[in-house]
Image 1 (cartoon, helix red, strand yellow):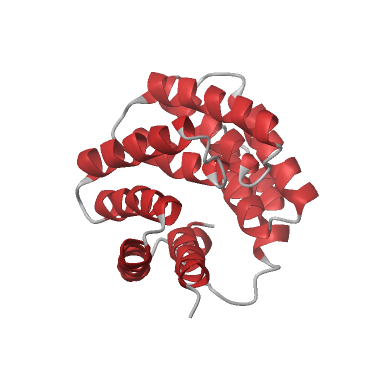
Image 2: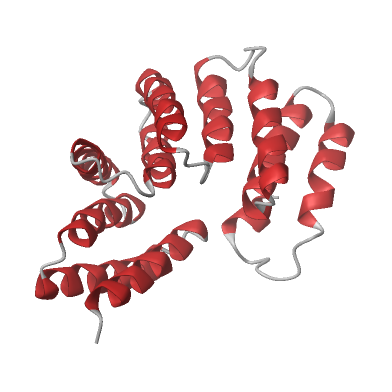
Length: 210
Protein backbone atom coordinates (compact mmCIF):
# COMPACT_ATOMS: atom_id res chain seq x y z
CA UNK A 1 0.00 0.00 0.00
CA UNK A 2 3.01 2.35 0.04
CA UNK A 3 4.76 2.32 -3.35
CA UNK A 4 7.88 4.23 -2.28
CA UNK A 5 8.56 1.67 0.49
CA UNK A 6 8.11 -1.18 -2.02
CA UNK A 7 10.52 0.51 -4.43
CA UNK A 8 13.04 1.14 -1.62
CA UNK A 9 12.89 -2.50 -0.49
CA UNK A 10 13.64 -3.80 -3.98
CA UNK A 11 16.31 -1.13 -4.43
CA UNK A 12 18.15 -2.48 -1.39
CA UNK A 13 17.58 -6.00 -2.68
CA UNK A 14 19.36 -4.92 -5.84
CA UNK A 15 22.28 -3.51 -3.85
CA UNK A 16 22.68 -6.85 -2.07
CA UNK A 17 22.56 -8.78 -5.35
CA UNK A 18 25.24 -6.46 -6.71
CA UNK A 19 27.45 -7.10 -3.68
CA UNK A 20 27.36 -10.85 -4.35
CA UNK A 21 27.53 -10.35 -8.15
CA UNK A 22 24.16 -12.00 -8.86
CA UNK A 23 23.05 -10.16 -11.99
CA UNK A 24 19.97 -12.37 -12.51
CA UNK A 25 18.57 -11.54 -9.06
CA UNK A 26 19.49 -7.88 -9.51
CA UNK A 27 17.62 -7.84 -12.82
CA UNK A 28 14.43 -9.10 -11.15
CA UNK A 29 14.67 -6.47 -8.40
CA UNK A 30 15.43 -3.65 -10.84
CA UNK A 31 12.45 -4.56 -13.00
CA UNK A 32 10.23 -4.30 -9.91
CA UNK A 33 11.73 -0.94 -8.91
CA UNK A 34 11.12 0.39 -12.42
CA UNK A 35 7.57 -0.96 -12.61
CA UNK A 36 6.57 0.47 -9.22
CA UNK A 37 8.22 3.82 -10.00
CA UNK A 38 6.41 4.05 -13.34
CA UNK A 39 3.02 3.06 -11.94
CA UNK A 40 3.24 5.42 -8.94
CA UNK A 41 5.07 8.21 -10.82
CA UNK A 42 8.09 8.07 -8.48
CA UNK A 43 10.77 10.11 -10.21
CA UNK A 44 13.88 9.44 -8.10
CA UNK A 45 13.51 5.63 -7.83
CA UNK A 46 12.90 5.59 -11.59
CA UNK A 47 16.11 7.48 -12.27
CA UNK A 48 18.05 5.29 -9.86
CA UNK A 49 16.53 2.24 -11.54
CA UNK A 50 18.04 3.29 -14.87
CA UNK A 51 21.51 3.28 -13.30
CA UNK A 52 20.94 -0.13 -11.74
CA UNK A 53 19.67 -1.52 -15.06
CA UNK A 54 22.91 -0.28 -16.66
CA UNK A 55 24.87 -2.38 -14.15
CA UNK A 56 22.80 -5.45 -15.02
CA UNK A 57 23.45 -4.87 -18.73
CA UNK A 58 27.18 -4.56 -18.08
CA UNK A 59 27.29 -7.78 -16.05
CA UNK A 60 25.26 -9.68 -18.63
CA UNK A 61 27.60 -9.00 -21.53
CA UNK A 62 26.82 -5.48 -22.72
CA UNK A 63 29.70 -3.88 -20.83
CA UNK A 64 30.17 -0.78 -23.02
CA UNK A 65 26.47 0.00 -23.35
CA UNK A 66 25.88 -0.71 -19.68
CA UNK A 67 28.76 1.52 -18.56
CA UNK A 68 27.49 4.36 -20.76
CA UNK A 69 23.98 4.07 -19.27
CA UNK A 70 25.42 4.01 -15.74
CA UNK A 71 27.44 7.14 -16.43
CA UNK A 72 24.54 9.02 -18.01
CA UNK A 73 22.27 8.11 -15.09
CA UNK A 74 24.95 9.02 -12.53
CA UNK A 75 25.38 12.46 -14.14
CA UNK A 76 21.61 12.97 -14.23
CA UNK A 77 21.29 12.20 -10.52
CA UNK A 78 24.26 14.45 -9.79
CA UNK A 79 22.87 17.38 -11.76
CA UNK A 80 19.54 17.08 -9.97
CA UNK A 81 21.42 17.01 -6.63
CA UNK A 82 19.89 13.61 -5.87
CA UNK A 83 23.13 12.47 -4.32
CA UNK A 84 22.01 9.72 -1.95
CA UNK A 85 23.96 6.47 -2.61
CA UNK A 86 26.24 8.09 -5.20
CA UNK A 87 29.38 7.05 -3.29
CA UNK A 88 28.17 3.44 -3.66
CA UNK A 89 26.97 3.76 -7.25
CA UNK A 90 30.24 5.42 -8.18
CA UNK A 91 32.17 2.27 -7.23
CA UNK A 92 30.01 0.23 -9.62
CA UNK A 93 30.72 2.67 -12.44
CA UNK A 94 34.45 2.63 -11.63
CA UNK A 95 34.50 -1.17 -11.82
CA UNK A 96 32.85 -1.04 -15.26
CA UNK A 97 35.33 1.60 -16.48
CA UNK A 98 38.18 -0.57 -15.23
CA UNK A 99 36.85 -3.60 -17.05
CA UNK A 100 36.81 -1.79 -20.40
CA UNK A 101 40.23 -0.21 -19.88
CA UNK A 102 39.37 3.45 -19.27
CA UNK A 103 42.11 3.82 -16.67
CA UNK A 104 42.92 7.55 -16.78
CA UNK A 105 39.20 8.31 -16.85
CA UNK A 106 38.77 6.05 -13.82
CA UNK A 107 41.35 7.92 -11.75
CA UNK A 108 39.73 11.27 -12.57
CA UNK A 109 36.32 9.89 -11.61
CA UNK A 110 37.68 8.54 -8.31
CA UNK A 111 38.89 12.09 -7.54
CA UNK A 112 35.31 13.28 -8.14
CA UNK A 113 33.95 10.64 -5.77
CA UNK A 114 36.38 11.73 -3.07
CA UNK A 115 35.11 15.32 -3.31
CA UNK A 116 31.50 14.09 -3.36
CA UNK A 117 32.08 12.05 -0.21
CA UNK A 118 33.43 15.08 1.64
CA UNK A 119 30.67 17.41 0.42
CA UNK A 120 27.82 15.05 1.32
CA UNK A 121 29.39 13.41 4.41
CA UNK A 122 28.69 10.02 2.80
CA UNK A 123 31.25 7.45 3.94
CA UNK A 124 29.32 4.59 2.36
CA UNK A 125 31.72 2.42 0.32
CA UNK A 126 34.60 4.90 0.62
CA UNK A 127 36.99 1.98 1.40
CA UNK A 128 36.16 0.75 -2.11
CA UNK A 129 37.32 4.07 -3.57
CA UNK A 130 40.84 3.43 -2.22
CA UNK A 131 40.83 -0.24 -3.27
CA UNK A 132 39.71 0.64 -6.79
CA UNK A 133 42.32 3.37 -7.00
CA UNK A 134 44.96 0.75 -6.14
CA UNK A 135 43.54 -1.57 -8.82
CA UNK A 136 43.62 1.23 -11.41
CA UNK A 137 47.15 2.27 -10.51
CA UNK A 138 48.25 -1.35 -10.89
CA UNK A 139 46.75 -1.53 -14.38
CA UNK A 140 48.56 1.66 -15.38
CA UNK A 141 51.90 0.86 -13.75
CA UNK A 142 52.39 -2.30 -11.66
CA UNK A 143 55.58 -0.80 -10.20
CA UNK A 144 53.81 2.26 -8.77
CA UNK A 145 54.90 2.71 -5.12
CA UNK A 146 51.48 4.02 -4.09
CA UNK A 147 49.54 0.83 -4.77
CA UNK A 148 50.13 -0.82 -1.40
CA UNK A 149 49.39 2.46 0.39
CA UNK A 150 45.96 2.70 -1.26
CA UNK A 151 45.15 -0.90 -0.37
CA UNK A 152 46.28 -0.12 3.19
CA UNK A 153 43.95 2.89 3.40
CA UNK A 154 41.05 0.79 2.13
CA UNK A 155 41.76 -1.94 4.68
CA UNK A 156 42.13 0.45 7.62
CA UNK A 157 38.98 2.42 6.83
CA UNK A 158 36.89 -0.72 6.29
CA UNK A 159 38.08 -2.04 9.66
CA UNK A 160 37.21 1.27 11.34
CA UNK A 161 33.73 1.18 9.80
CA UNK A 162 33.16 -2.48 10.67
CA UNK A 163 32.54 -3.11 6.94
CA UNK A 164 33.67 -6.73 6.86
CA UNK A 165 32.84 -7.37 3.18
CA UNK A 166 34.85 -4.33 2.11
CA UNK A 167 37.65 -5.27 4.51
CA UNK A 168 37.85 -8.67 2.80
CA UNK A 169 38.05 -7.10 -0.67
CA UNK A 170 40.83 -4.75 0.42
CA UNK A 171 42.73 -7.52 2.19
CA UNK A 172 42.39 -9.77 -0.86
CA UNK A 173 43.80 -7.09 -3.15
CA UNK A 174 46.67 -6.32 -0.80
CA UNK A 175 47.45 -10.01 -0.30
CA UNK A 176 47.61 -10.56 -4.06
CA UNK A 177 49.90 -7.55 -4.37
CA UNK A 178 52.22 -8.83 -1.64
CA UNK A 179 52.33 -12.28 -3.22
CA UNK A 180 53.18 -10.70 -6.56
CA UNK A 181 56.05 -8.87 -4.85
CA UNK A 182 57.45 -12.10 -3.40
CA UNK A 183 55.85 -11.75 0.06
CA UNK A 184 53.08 -14.40 0.06
CA UNK A 185 53.33 -15.23 3.76
CA UNK A 186 52.80 -11.59 4.66
CA UNK A 187 49.81 -11.52 2.31
CA UNK A 188 48.32 -14.56 4.03
CA UNK A 189 48.65 -12.85 7.42
CA UNK A 190 46.77 -9.84 6.03
CA UNK A 191 43.97 -11.90 4.52
CA UNK A 192 43.35 -14.69 7.01
CA UNK A 193 41.80 -12.74 9.96
CA UNK A 194 38.98 -11.20 7.92
CA UNK A 195 38.34 -14.32 5.88
CA UNK A 196 38.00 -16.52 8.96
CA UNK A 197 35.28 -14.26 10.39
CA UNK A 198 32.89 -15.34 7.63
CA UNK A 199 30.68 -18.26 8.61
CA UNK A 200 28.50 -18.30 5.48
CA UNK A 201 28.49 -17.18 1.86
CA UNK A 202 31.61 -19.09 0.88
CA UNK A 203 30.27 -19.65 -2.65
CA UNK A 204 30.16 -15.88 -3.36
CA UNK A 205 32.78 -14.40 -5.71
CA UNK A 206 34.59 -12.35 -3.04
CA UNK A 207 35.04 -15.32 -0.70
CA UNK A 208 36.05 -17.58 -3.57
CA UNK A 209 38.68 -15.03 -4.60
CA UNK A 210 39.96 -14.77 -1.03
